[in-house]
Length: 141
Image 1 (cartoon, rainbow, N blue to C red):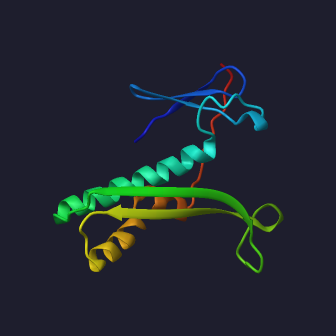
Image 2 (cartoon, rainbow, N blue to C red):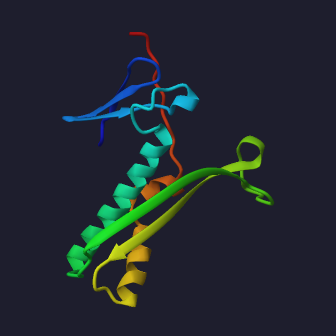
């Protein structure tokens, strides 16, 4: 189980700690932050992109495929959910993540197609699609 601790700093800056690793998060200046780190949605996209790339690298390694590099470009937007009966949320808007995956190496078309299928099996992707329940415990101190 991953345990991440986030501590507020000056302004909107946040120190993120997981074991011996440290990151900073912040909001852009136009949103009231100091732009000292990635914003929360960028961190979410980074998690999905890293997991996608790692999943493809592990799969290719196990198969002995000549995958040399994976590049994952991600964009997040809130879009209108017109004509969507099961869509919930504020004013008919839903979150959409666009993920573009580029693989490099002497792979054939069958291998590239299989990697596209495997990308949808990345654990973070599966978690996002399944939905997340957050159990809050707020205390003084």
